Image 1 (cartoon, rainbow, N blue to C red):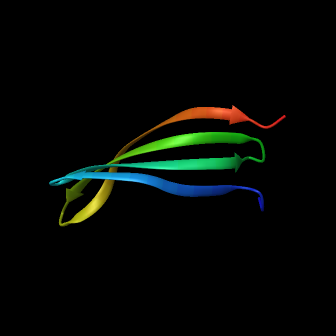
Image 2 (spheres, rainbow, N blue to C red):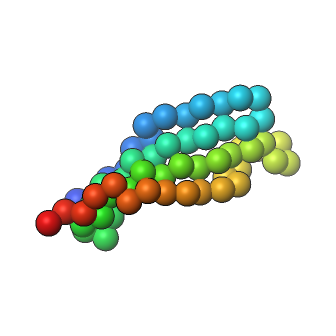
Length: 60
């Protein structure tokens, strides 16, 4: 949808591990989320190893 957007708001790196935070607004037109991605260096490159999220709002 044209009204959805996502922005990387934080990246924390500690050696070969990292956590990235992404804020999404307007997902499916009405939902907002904060996504938390765990990343690790595997086979020489950064790869997402886990994702969890929080529903942070619904547009009325």
